[in-house]
Each structure stands twice: as C-alpha cells, then as structure tokens.
Image 1 (cartoon, rainbow, N blue to C red):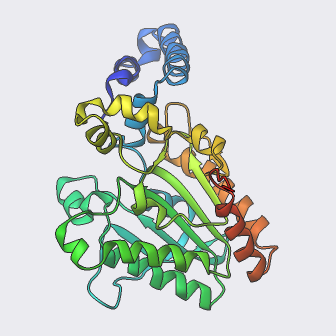
Image 2 (cartoon, helix red, strand yellow):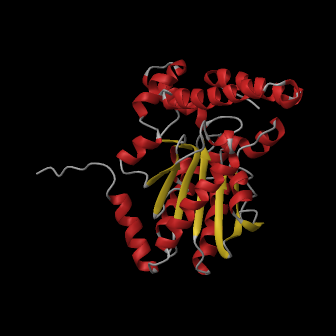
Image 3 (cartoon, rainbow, N blue to C red):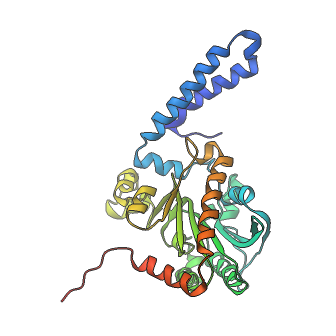
Length: 317
C-alpha cells in the first residue's frame, strides 16, 4: 500500500502490528503490546488527520490508493452494463458510463476513471477526458432522460484533456454542450466529487440538483500547480496556490457550491474503501429519495435556481 509522508508514522505502527500477529500474539504473550499499539494507531490517526493542512488534503484527494469510480460502482450498485462510444468518433476510457441498479431501481451512472497501473493510467489518460468522453456521457444522459431514469455522476479528474487533438475535436464545445444537456434533464441528477474536481472537466458532469463532495476531495477552477504557474510563474508554489483557491470540501459548502460533505473513514477513503462506499451509498439513497418526490419541471427549476444563486452579483446604476 502506498502512503504519503505524513502517513508514515501510522504505517510503521501498522506494520509492527502485522508482524506481531504473524509471529503469534497469544503464543508469545504479546496481547498487551498489541492492544497498546492499536490504541496508539487510533489516537495517532485522529491527531494527524484532524491537523492536516490544505496541501496535505490536496495530496489525500490524489492518493494513489484512493477509491476510484469503478471501486464505488462495484460496492454500491448492481447489474452494471457499460455503454461505449459517442457514436461520432470513438470511445474514451477516461469516462465510464452505463446503466446500473441501486436497490433494484435502474439509474444512469457516469464517472471519470483514473488508472492504477502505468498501462491503465495511459489507457484512461489519467482521468482526463477528450471531447468524445463528454459526448458519450451526454448520450447516456439523454437516454436516461428519455426513459425517466435518475442520473448519478462521479467526478474525479485534474481537468479535461488540453491536447491539440482534443481541442481540434471541440473540447470546449463538448463541455458546454454537456452543461446545457444536464441543465435540461427532467430526472433527478446527483453529482459527487470523489477525488479531484478540476476545472471545466469536472463541471461538465457537475450540473446537478444535488452536488455532494467527499470529505477529502477537492473542487476548483484549476489545479494548484496550474494556478501557481499563472500567478507566480512558479509551479513549485502549488501549496500556496491551494490555500488561495479554497478548494476543500468545507470551502465548497461555505461558497454554496456543494450541498453536503460526505464523511470518509478515519484516515481517508483509501484506508477503508468498503466503509467509504457504505457512507456514500447512504447519502446517495437519501438524496435520490428526496429528489424523486419532484416532477420534471420542478427538478429543472430547482437546478436552475441552485446555480443562479452561486456567486455574488452587483447591479450598477
């Protein structure tokens, strides 16, 4: 298991605990030492994770072992059928989409997907979608709209892919079209930021009736590295930029961008993916139940009012 620098003390203690268990705790009378170590791990977790700085939380949102969309899909939903391609150019593996069941109810699920291995990271393009990825997502959204199925999106991307080919195929148009398509859906729409919520690539799946965000996720108009490069012409000042961007979950709630912060297991979702999925599943079911009480017109009006209320405006006379 990979770990960040500030997690090292906890990992070392956990390694010691595993060694004691393998050696044979009962046979050699180490029960007392084991209990003390487990208590110390619990205390240390609370001390470390409650005192994390902004940049450390950004690192957690990018943790290599953090659950990705497919990890949540496997744990929360049943009978997933993936649908491929945008019917115009190709299939983009950076976005996974299709139909699944949530407690027996058919829903459309769409999410960014990063990779674990080097080969998979390249295939998924590190979760950075091309225009065809967003057009594929729109195809699934329109299908859900036609058959009156709720749409659940899962955001985890540094941003849409900025390559020349993507721009030539209409990256900005695809993102804009996705925003428009989501604003018109006459079905419940719930978006969840599960890791990195970066720039327009994240917002393209984020126009929803309810926007949720995991405790250690981030949501911002630009990556800290990109922001530092623009402001100070120095990408190494990413930690300073992260503070200025106010990209953490509590900031997003204060700004009215996010409706609810979903708690993560102690130490972050990567330390207990099963419990992280359980907590997210509870929140999704609750919000879906509430939204399902409204008709299509009310859902569209509520979504419009939600996003129009964001930010501050001033009328000049």
